[in-house]
Length: 174
Figure 1 (cartoon, rainbow, N blue to C red):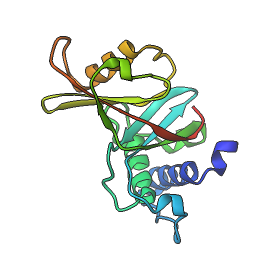
Figure 2: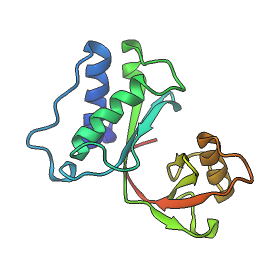
Figure 3: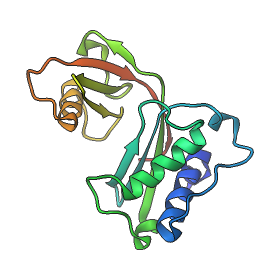
Figure 4: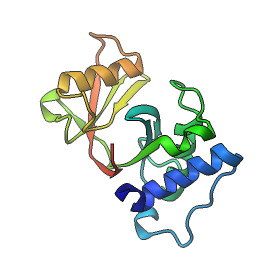
């Protein structure tokens, strides 16, 4: 599979498999590829038979580098996504992985500055914040994108919101 040749996807897969099989965190590659030696937010999403099975990420870097960010988020996507039961070893060979590296978000003034194919969105209202990655199947309009991100955050229609957009570098195939 082409996606498995990608260093980010390979690291996410190794992280999930090691954690689920033996409850052990893999070590970051040493030396890490140069693209992993920067700090950035990242999302790791797992799908089983084309259906979402876990997706956890960080808007901004929490770890010192992308290698550790991917390792932490891959493990969380596998066993800590509150929408799903933790993965079992029997499921591992049925998973596909994507890793999205987030560019820094920028505040925008209007939904006119969004494009659900190009930009992800962050919707904030007070302390509530919801994020939706770009270019997701079934999310075809800006209104859908903002509505889904708002719902994820528990933001009700009519509450004042602040919008941010961001681009991603996607690794792996949906």
